[in-house]
Length: 152
Image (cartoon, rainbow, N blue to C red):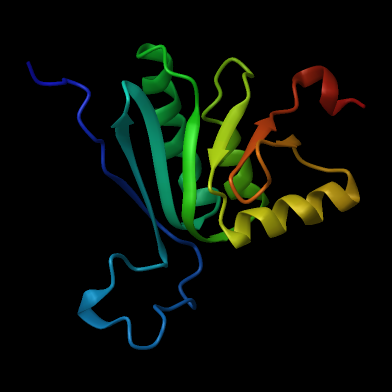
């Protein structure tokens, strides 16, 4: 019996055209870092959203669509962010949009870019609440701010 929930490749062009592939990337590069790559893989019966490249405002709609599918499949939002080369506040917001019901978003293996943005936002008191799970290099849990949290 095949799983009808096959991987869903989605791509979004970055709004950062000045960024280019690292020198020497050539034809052996797995992807262009100026493109956000999104797909869902299945691991042990659970969905994992794999994101790589640049996460910015252009990723909001594709990630929201994946979030709706996760809701239909009754899967919690789990993200592998090890391949994220760039992320801004809009990209982080897009990641949080995977959580339709405000449940925590588990981010596995957050890249250096993701961890840096979370540290900066924590310093200024913005963004989602972050909890480390077995150390911030292994995983973090994002607790998206609810409507009542926005008013302060």
